[in-house]
Image (cartoon, rainbow, N blue to C red; front, side, top):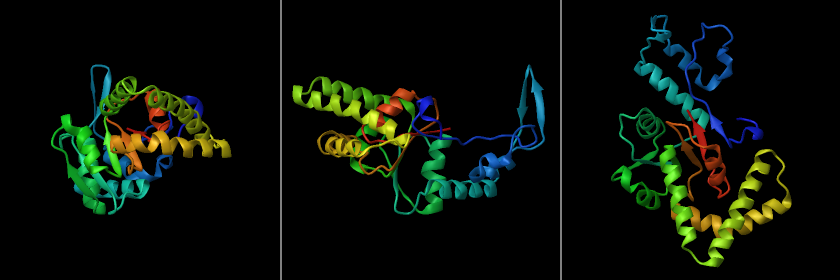
Length: 232
């Protein structure tokens, strides 16, 4: 979790580090400690870069999925939407390995072009979206608000800006009773209807991964009550 000053609402870090290199402690990421075992001692120099050779075994895969399950808290009560190719490593983790381990339900979308419609129909509790999906959602909402009535546009702009401010204060532990009251009113008038239209009302764990995403876009979604976390 990063400081509020760095402007990213929330970040999970999943990555590999070589425990043999100085200055790297295995205790930094106890939930993913088994990932350190994926590196072996085979290294070679190509040009000016060192490359490491490693092999992921089935036992390592099961151990890492069990650690992810414990860390994220996904259970058999959750349901997910699969829409990326299953050769995609993040999709394979979220749509195959994790559901097979915990017993979660996976809905397979028709195609990546129908993600928005599939989201509305499925309304998943856990959703992994690449940055392009979140960007398209953002653009769609902005365009529809521009064509809406003056009242809807005014309410959206007001509560979206207030929502971002409240989300930042909430993240910093500075939320007041007035913030909670404004949020409840905004949830009734703006946040809930928009979340239901996006298919994210039931989503308690929305993720962005596979590529960098703009911090401002993350905060924009947090301002609507969709707390997108960035994982890599």
